[in-house]
Length: 256
Image 1 (cartoon, rainbow, N blue to C red):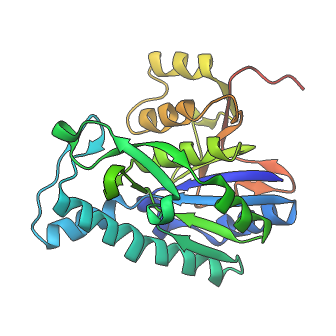
Image 2: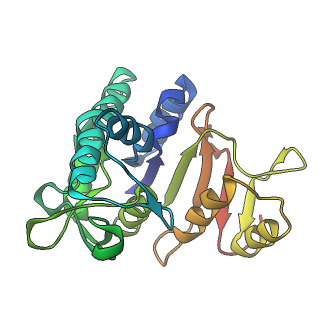
Image 3: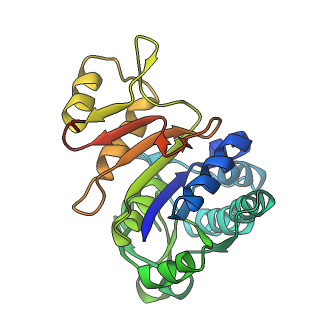
């Protein structure tokens, strides 16, 4: 079974195009199973603001008190997850929304409870349950909320959660969906980069600003199991006639 794990950030959800869903359907038609992991930063921020709950970030991670955790889980599992499932089903893609803390689907340990609160690092993913759904040609849509120790629930960075899922199922491809085409150099899309080339472009200032955390997350997705990582646009086709669009990251240069 060929598998693609798709990480979709909350900020790009409203910008997903018809072409994006067409690419998802084409992947399925070509024998790929799809697993989707989503974030929800803007939705969480809006709910926190409405409830007048303060929130801050440390080292790119949201400091998560019990109040923030309850709000984040409501935004992710109660709002974002449902919206994404409905979008998929409206485009003819069978899917099911799952809160990843349920039934130990995703398990995590505290990173630093004193500094970060209820924030976790994934330690285990129940890949058997995910693969059962994939064999039924159903797309599991997962929240980045994990079961913690002693019955706690932990907030997980969505990029990290998606990487953990990709590793657990030995995904053939890992996609990070953004609002840009990929890495640009002199205005042109770079279709493929090795880890070394990517780091060189960061040092040279070619990759800058908000693209830096995107490509660093892409590089972190590499493992013994995951060898092909892509940054793709949610506004355009990312897979057509068997060809991938966007920027693909590989550990070593691929020769044709």
